[in-house]
Image (tube, rainbow, N blue to C red; front, side):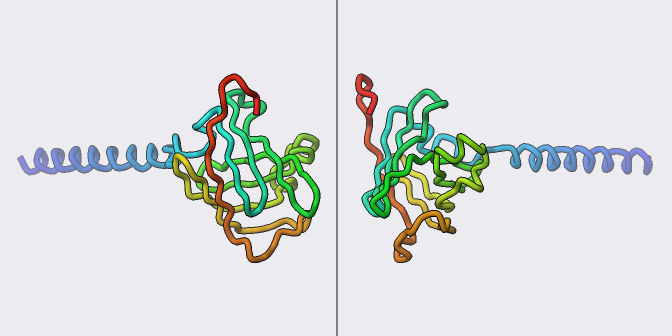
Length: 152
């Protein structure tokens, strides 16, 4: 009888341990920012006035997240590279197409606060490839819907 009681306890403990292990493993695979990033809103344009930068999200992933960064009287074609989490890199699209390394092509790295109509990027690091006003600590993008008939 005593061994049967221990066996039942062991089975319960094993079941609880297994359930806990499954929850830990599956929670690590859940994207906490799914359906929150700008990439979840196709046919939109995200615009910031300070600094002067925008990007578009097009339904075709090969051309999505491309925009322009007007800085120091120069226009740089940029691509927004969103991490699995809240991280983002604003990269020089011409460089990333050549070397396919978002870290080396990064102009700005930061972390995001996402909403349906606004993206706030808190700047973590600015590349020495650009001269960004050091008083700019955040970039706020506002969403605009693009017409389905126009490409801009």
